[in-house]
Length: 206
Image 1 (spheres, rainbow, N blue to C red):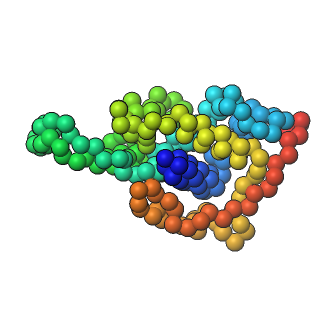
Image 2: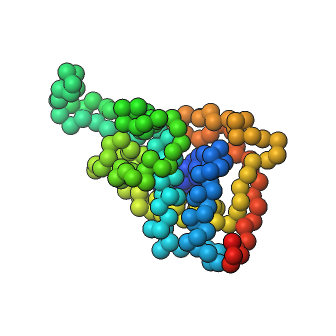
Image 3: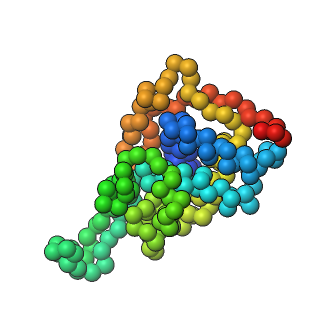
């Protein structure tokens, strides 16, 4: 339980910062939103999160492109069934590829592009009711800690966006980042993300 709760959170935040650094216009919009809500306060509160709609869209896009657990916990069919002409006997073990579902061109326009805006006018959510996006699974086998996980990710990302201005080291450009994924139960980036964090100071006229 501890591994599932910490490893997946780290992976999501790591991919979020990677994509934001590769897409500085998205980073700027997300930071502007967070800082306009917090203003002179220095700590993000859970009560602030409902106002951070663009940041929530960023997180949804991370879940779509980079689910921390690319293949969901195995399922098992309860009875014999025919599905699209295939006979599937009871007790068949089923693996659901959430990574491929999130990049399916039949469900998503420009599926490999990082575009949080796609969620601003969309009702698609990650809570298991929309099968185009199921990073937490769906139904009775969905992740029981989804509410806690979302709160942790949103609070952490909002605090990072508020507290620092982020950029890549002078010798590294976005195109140089290694986005190779290490496949396993969870899906890390192969290389560590090296960044420069400059503390942000709020000014009333900013």
